[in-house]
Length: 427
Image (cartoon, rainbow, N blue to C red; front, top):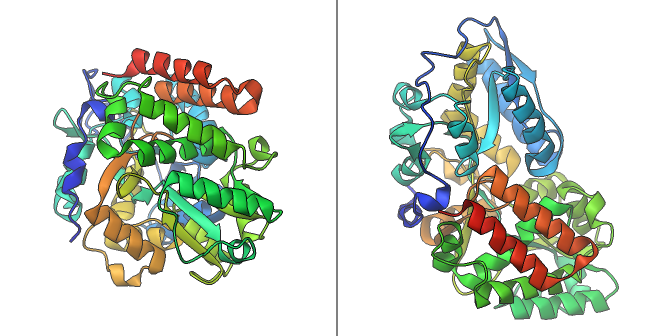
């Protein structure tokens, strides 16, 4: 069993937990009952390894609940930006899907405050999930004694992926990870000199993913986690230094970045057109699908810094208020939380199970490193993927990042915008 005690180091304020609107509980009010056999599952898993993971889960769903029919409500768009916009429009129009994907953590707070999702604590009892999930994860998901989602997996966001053969041609030891952000910047310079894109990156959310990895590395977990409850200010000198490193790294990236989503940026690495890519570990499945050999064709390491940190996020699913087919939604939640569901899904998607009783020996070399890190290292919540900040705060942070990387390049103005966003939302 994994030891996740470090989850408790994250305060409820860092997760955006505050005063809540009164919500109906356990699906007793607001949710639909017998909605027929169709179950609309709303996600942003529309391509690549994400779609492969969804397909694997759908297969198990069909085996476990053959009386229901899966209806794919996926909306394309990395990190779910397009999906979240469409979902919010539907929820406001009282037209919810039967269940929808959301990142565990602060992202759920907006739905809770708007009374748009049900308390599913009773399902944790019915499916015996309080025993299957680590206590610290359950504590993290609990808000004022209630739980509003069921996680399908755990991902790591702060991973540097590298094309080993490209590194060798650039004179970089592919088997030795850099010891600091400065060392990594020096390797980026070497890669640039070899005539390839040193660091491939995609559109805004991918850039925010890069930013958070740098902040984790440069600040350390305690100071980084403090950014979300006011214990660390966004005008701190260490944040300034992190933004400077971010600016330098963006100088090594591909010029077409704003037109790419993460699979396209990762593909540049797979094709040998780029040396490095900083992305969550869903990228691992893309390397496997491309039949690249771990350690021979590609390598990976957490972005180095002050301490070993696991950048945390988890996909989870909810029971919306007014779900047309609440019974079907509960069947989906049953499957995704089951041993078979979590095994099939995570093997395909590149993540690790939220359950602690899944056979971990079936997971590959990278996943074994993630399992070990999650058990032993400091845990910090992802900004880009909803674990650290609510949607409104992320939107402001993303807008500021986009303005900074698309031409403004005014670091002082960028940091001022980040400070202003924190003043609006931080506890």
